[in-house]
Length: 318
Image (tube, rainbow, N blue to C red; front, side, top):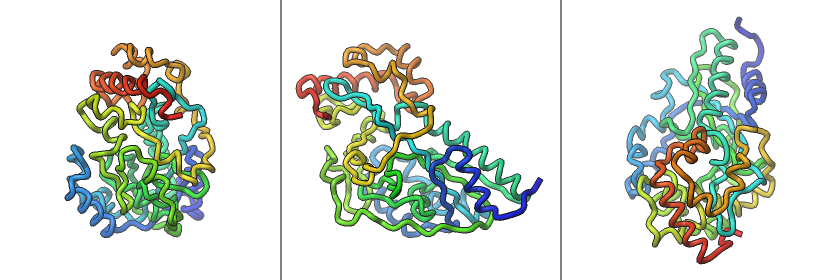
């Protein structure tokens, strides 16, 4: 049954009910400025081996090519910050994003429910949800929807909860009330640039993936050789250094989503546990986590090379 009233407020209330920590809405339309940035970034080879980033650029910048008739972009944020950290000393470290269940599944489940609800609000509505595996410029839309601004490290920052949150998008043909775009509040701060162990942060709010630790340990199909392992700052999946030093993350509060909690068994793993991790245990421990995308042989080779460096220089992340 169609529901009368302010659809925008109903949608935002439903997003909160589904557990999203943030929700903003922007009018759909081509992102010409962001499309130009993406094309320039790709032309310089900064997408490394991520060839898919060079495809469908026009589609990424125009939501109507993903959902014909799209009029509104609903952007959601889901906090994943925790103070219960893993790694450090001689133990290799995971990025916080990889502690719990695969966020693609967690967010998509919520977005599907939001899409269903929008259909209940208006029988003529057609909507579609997206997580970051789809060709859409999430961070640009999040900024336009007032969720936050892209910091110098390219990560989105919200002035209330910091930057440790995942984004989810719903495109819809409904015209809604729109939020004001977020204002850049980084100012002259460059702590993230100074803290990057591999100098991967460009001067235009983008990252050179060819250098980035997150790319090397997540997207790169080949293992990082031993000579480069010293640059990984103890990380075996992802990297949080630029976010850890950001002043806006002083406001970060622990998430309230059990799906993102790190299992005690993983948190307690020693350096030897990581080095001796069998393929069977890798599958058992990480079958539902973002690590499931990594090939075991490549992952364990990175663990071996990174741990060698940590034994020479223990505590490099403390």
